[in-house]
Image 1 (cartoon, protein in one colour):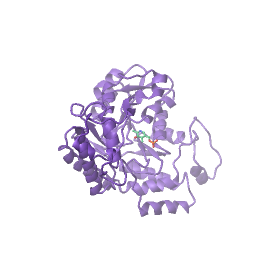
Image 2 (spheres, rainbow, N blue to C red):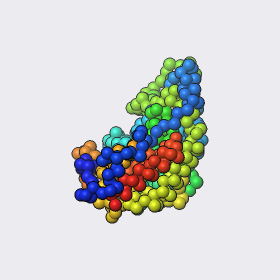
Image 3 (tube, rainbow, N blue to C red):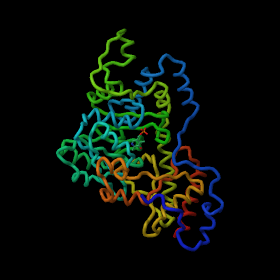
Image 4 (cartoon, helix red, strand yellow):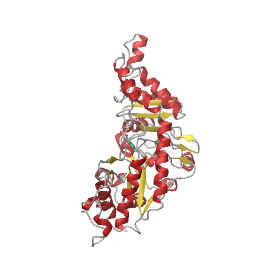
Amino acid sequence: MPEQSPIHRCDGMMKRHEKNLALFGGRPVRETMLPYGRQSIQKEDIDAVSDVLSSDWLTTGPKVTEFERIFAKTVQAKEAVAVCNGTAALHTAMFALGIKPGDEVIVPAMTFAASANCVVYLGGKPVFCDVDPETLLIDAEKIQEKISPRTKAIIAVDYAGQPCDYDRISEIAEKHHLPIVDDACHALGGTYKNRPVGSLGLLNTFSFHPVKTITTGEGGMITTDDATLAGRMRLFRNHGITSDHQQREEQGSWFYEMVDLGFNYRLTDIQCALGMSQVKRLPGWISRRQEIARQYNVAFTRIPGIKPLHVRPEVSHAYHLYVIRLDPSLLKEHDRAFIFKALRAEGLGINVHYIPVHLHPFYRTHFGTRPGLCPVAESAYENIISLPMFPRMTDNDVTDVITAVDKVTRSCL
Ligand SMILES: *Cc1c(COP(=O)(O)O)cnc(C)c1O
């Protein structure tokens, strides 16, 4: 893949602007690195965790049920099942749907590998679908072409925090009797037509990794309105065993049965206490993310050569990521690699989300995927950059990002 190209100046001749770049020894915009995402931990979080540490239950206790209840209420779903990370949430969702060898599941190409890996864990085949060029969300019109008699589900990913076009996806899914799984790891706190993310798919999965909207260190959740699926998922996260430790304690019984092959995917009470404390601050954090995005949007209309992704009017964007696209008609070949290194040198901990999943060696080797399969995702990958975006960023941090982006892109024009 072309990412590893050597540092390349935009022009053979060193321009006046270029000499100021930190990459070439100029003064950086920031002395300290601003990460692209970061957790917010306050005293109340620490207190909540330390209370659990001195309680009777460190895992499989009352905090798990409480966190599940609060989380379900937050996203207006009937059930929430806590698991140990977002990848386990996806695996658990695929198990609940009964995915088995030979089954196909449609997955967008522009996502984190875990969105597809969960299908492979159960012997299924992820069928990669291209994305919309404006939003980089799964292209509803292209889902249709990917459906075969073996298709068992559609995984929609709310990339960057923008909910997918669920009305259109549901139309197609209903026509073919397919369930929708929303990989909502980016989009906690977002809405689609005023309906909260977490209530949009039959199953909806979340991650509580520190870069995500709320954190439990590691953690995950699946939400659904379907009690039967929730039951299957509670079984799966606990070895496939019919009762958990707390239930046996309450019933004064030692008896249990393992009825299916599950895993130990449990989330601890320590983590659930942290999650409960975090989720209380969700609305404020989403407003702050949206405010930062607004400042970026305004500033970037004045900077030629870059463009934020399109946001559709019917959504409230959760802004896990703020992604800009470099305009290939203004910025020449190799410029993303150059701009990436130059922005890092200015002190921005920027990132690229994502290398299209079907281009990873694992998928090329085992599923025969190759470049050309999802051309929109592939060409987007060449010119996207994720800028710093997290609630605790100060207005000065935001200004630094804008200054650095302006400085670096102008040196390339
Ligand atoms: C973070 C993420 C995951 C995986 O979550 P983990 O908690 O890191 O396992 C899955 N899908 C998407 C889209 C993600 O961003």
